[in-house]
Image 1 (cartoon, protein in one colour):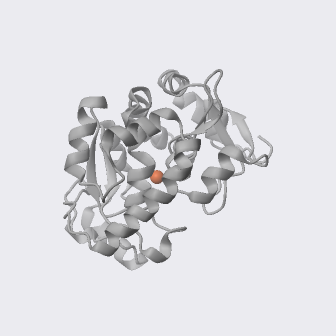
Image 2 (cartoon, protein in one colour):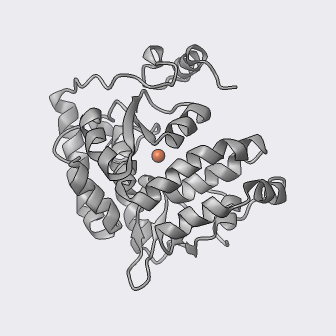
Length: 277
Ligand SMILES: [Fe+2]
């Protein structure tokens, strides 16, 4: 049973979260209310200009094609306009939210091919680091790769099945899968260099370079069950990055995985150390 909007709004206000949850609809979405100041538009362009210098070199081509197709770089995107461009490509659309939302409605949105994007942007003082995910992380990080049909299918399947894993006690395990793919995923297709596609990397100036280029970055071949067993870092660089051979490998591994068996095997056992996995 999911938490009510009113209770969640009260919790978020008590924690000092920035979004206005009091205006949420029952599915935790809000109106985007496109009313951004010149200063906010400038922060958006600064973030995009700076990050694009890196993504051109380090991001997977399907992410770059997504940026091109959606046209995100000139000004803060209008959610409805982006949805109109995204829908014909993969059937996904964007919905506005005030920030993080509870797991259950988040998964329901993914299962329905709706990606929740925060409707506010970090300030000029937070160009390099922000605690809560903001519009730049959500849009610049997550949305372009939703134009890649196979990854888009994986994200929908994740939304459909994550709740089952949680019901079996596998909430941490299923979160690790999202973390090491949608947030910090790398990909190396045969004959190509390692590239990034995860949103946590795309929206980080320093970690994107580290993850793809540093000799100290620990690259591990993707294996679904290993990913689900490996601990991760929340506010420092990851100590491991899992590398997909293709997006098909991710979608197909998840589609055919017996989540009940995997969760049953590992949920009460110690996690794998990312430094040595
Ligand atoms: Fe994210």
